[in-house]
Amino acid sequence: MQLDIVIAFFILGVVVRLLRANVQFPPALYQSLTLFLMLAIGLKGGIALAEHGTWQLLPQSFAVVMFGLILPLLAFPILFYIGQLNREDSASIAAHYGSVSIGTYAVAVALLESRGIPYEPYFPLFVVLLEMPAIAIGIALANGTNKKIDWRKLLHEILCNQGMILMTGALVIGLWAGERAASITPLFKDLFHGALALFLLEMGMVAASRLAQLKQTASFMLAFGIAMPLIGGFLGCLLGIAIGLTTGGAILLAVLGASASYIAVPAAMRVAVPKADHGLSITSSLGITFPFNILVGIPSYVLFTQWLMA
Image (cartoon, rainbow, N blue to C red; front, side, top):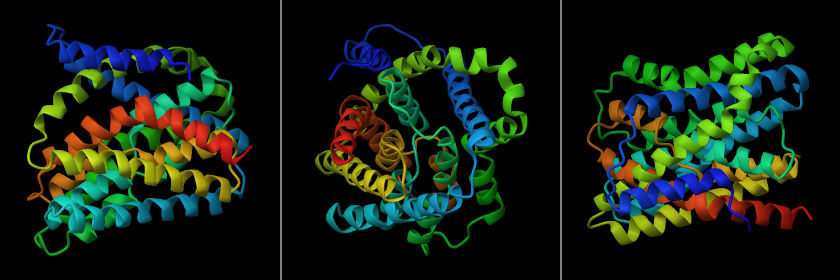
């Protein structure tokens, strides 16, 4: 399978960090690229929703939300009983793996578009819907570890984190504007792949640096960080087929099921489960699962889904 050009930038980032080359990525640029990708994905979904939105979205959306509730429930017993992690860490990591990675989704979209594989244009709606359920389940699984939760602050983190607020806001703007959004699409559509390439360059450097933080739990976390995406990807693919998505849509739902959050969930878990080792969660999602999905997972989900739907 031919390597997509944006993934090559991720590999370059990994090589840069492994060689300890003196390459500095400005933090402000990374933050700007993150915001850009969120806005671009949400806006594109809103414009498509204005054109293609139907009542069929309701049962599909409900199924996607249920999917987001099930994933952390599958991850938690693996972490708690097999990995022997404490309840706080198990709940926090499970929440990360029940939510989604915007970066992984963006790479999958770029790959499908480069290969001409069509998918549901309103799919960003499902990305937004999958942000919250896992956080709620993660808090419930950690119940009793921190009874003095500041619920007002927690709800603010869940509903107003940058991923949720920007993607939802851009989706609503796209839905409201429809064809009138054509004046700004040269920025958010034409420059999308270039911004994604720069984003992945930085993510490659970050992922390589995170691997050094794995210590006593290295063997188990490495196995979990690879096995859980495969479980989530397989279930996401089957769910996509079951709810009538196209091949491209089923691939994207597999990617969402396989990905792990490193933006929205960490902010919420720091408030809800302060005793958890949040560095372990980020290291697993960003140091193991993200590169696995980018290099191996996404191409595998494409092949598996195409084989099932052939």
